[in-house]
Image 1 (tube, rainbow, N blue to C red):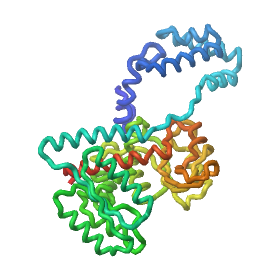
Image 2 (image 1 turned 90 degrees about the vertical axis):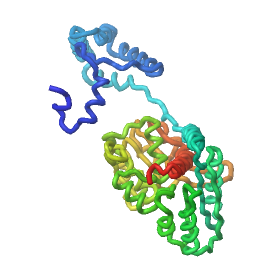
Image 3 (image 1 turned 135 degrees about the horizontal axis):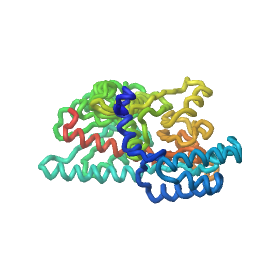
Image 4 (image 1 turned 180 degrees about the horizontal axis):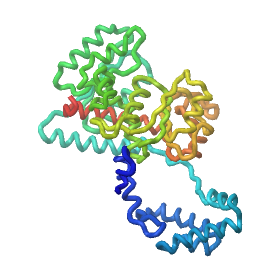
Length: 397
């Protein structure tokens, strides 16, 4: 009887195990070749096991075939008699090697993606098509917004995307903004449209975002794009959520069946991240097949800690400096910090940028972690450029 027939409902999970199981010889499953780093670690662990168990027992563990399996059992029984079960348990724990987290460089990853986009733009133009064109509407004099827009313009130029900024004063009317978006919708030269948020209080952001044609909505905020995302259909995905998903995929972080906690429930970040991670991997727009918990500002602190301590992946987008501390993270978790906070540095006397995670402490327990700055931020810009290329090619709409 085949493994899938023994375990109904695991048609995706079981085949993924088969290559690792391979053929059996006695008690030993066939192993995939190890990388140099893995081989060195394995050799170090074997040496530690030999010291803890004693050379005869370690030698028996390496014996091939059924005889090796019997020798293994004899060796373990001998060790139990010599040292007691508690001592043997301690020996296995002591063989573990703890290292700090792998720091995921969003800057390097974004650089690679931008190279890919640049090549695609060149290929697209070589076929006789116009260069993708991004129009950004910037309202008011918010310094942070102006900085973000400058970065987007610079990145667009680097990959061959034409861009423009339409600057309006902070007292601009909502009607005027809607007129501008309508004109851009009708302009065949314009591939993508972006309204830099936040907008002044007298303007309804959702109304303005819905004024952009779904096919040109490179921010993915139009109600049609949000709805299609929730239905696992192809859509323009919000750039920050897309950045998080791309980081997870390119880093090789497993999501299937894993526990994920998303801290923050905003409709532009927390919600779309949740949709990407929890949905079915076999749908039109494949998801991560994870079990996702959303927490927010009304989640009691003690409950938040319970959730995060069980999480294999923690994604934080709360806007609270160092909200996630090391005691809230389990060993080996992946931590993705979306937070952007400006705080006063008492050492330098200047303002510095930090995330929502206590980076220096959490990296001692996590397996993967993104820094701030240099993590999700650069990837968000890269995903915006990719959305602009998709809009130019009319791949989704």
